[in-house]
Amino acid sequence: MAMKDYSDEFKADAVALYESTPGATYKDIAADLGINRATLREWVLRDRVRRGFDPAAARPGAKAPVGAGQPAVSGDPDERIRQLEARVAELEASERKLATERDILRKAAKYFGRRDELVSRFQFVHDHRDAYEVKRLCQVLDVNRSSYYKWLGGAGARAVRRREDEVLAERIRRIHSDSGGAYGSPRVTAELRETGTRVNHKRVARVMRTYSIVGIRLRRRVRTTVPDPAAQAVPDLFERDFTAPEPGRKYMGDITYLPLAGGEFLYLVTVMDCFSRKVVGWSIADNMRTGLVTDALRMAAATRGGLDGAVFHSDHGAQYGSRAFADLCSDLGVTRSMGAVGSSADNAACESFHASLKRETLHGARDYGDSTTCRRTVFAWLTRYNTRRRHSANGHLSPNDYERRQHTAKLTLAA
Image (cartoon, rainbow, N blue to C red; front, side, top):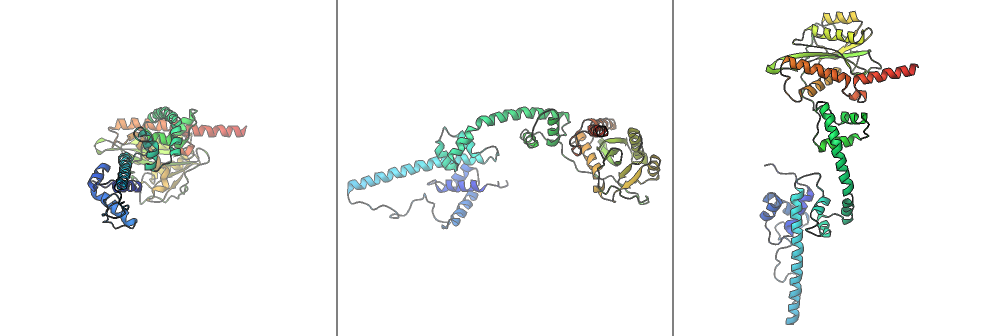
């Protein structure tokens, strides 16, 4: 079993417990603390060296040699009896004090050993205030009593916050569920604000973390680009700038695989507007022939009512470098642009989009099952993506809403 990473505070308390317990052994104390005997012994010896003592010396509670540090013995028998009685009372009081400290530290060691971040020293004092005096608990745990009482006075406010967090968590769960489990805290925050809830994104993240509400994480990317060595050279007109001042000016596209059961694949190609990240064209097929990319570009032209004067950016896949695709771009009035060979960063926006698509539709599964289910699932997601899915590049507006807002703003300026 791997050794736990104990805090310096835990080690100091463990050493203090051993040193202050007369007659106790490393084995007994280690068992109480739930640690290894050798580990405790190492802590104790290291602490003695740090304090300048011989590591092999007896601990403070051990029996001292006869005559060492003992008060002078009176010749009067009655006075001697009084001295002995006073010494016994002193030792009994010290033993009671040490026993109390030992019990507190033993319970505290197990309490804080759980590594629960919500457990505080104040909480320990509060939970054990009926068994021990608050003053004694605060002394042993080295906390200020006034600070404890201040913390205690805020219990009502904390209870109110907990109830409010529970209500907020239910709303977050509904939004998270409606997104297909895809939304993380930024998009959940945007959705809450859209419905009139004023909330800080840090609070949303904290509540999601507390109630284990987690968005879908990225999966490992698989490269599908196969360059054509004989393709005509096309310049990079984007230079990694995937933004546009208005819709219809700059487009980008890419091909990705869609895994099916049995090791088979479908292939998806998309055409995206750089202004709003709206998917204006797509095509799905069971092959990667040139027709896959030309069909998607034709759909984009139909969606936008034409692409004349636009720039289309892609990677160096053989389909984008084909003569058929070049001729179609020429017919549609589209200028081609290509990133560097072997650099995914030169088409990063499309790469990220396809990663999000598979992350939010596969939900961690290895494949979509059959081709019919795959087509239906991807079609539904692409449609929802344009109409409802909030995009961080759009200030957490959907692509359609973002374009609509831009169009309204232009009409307002024109008026």
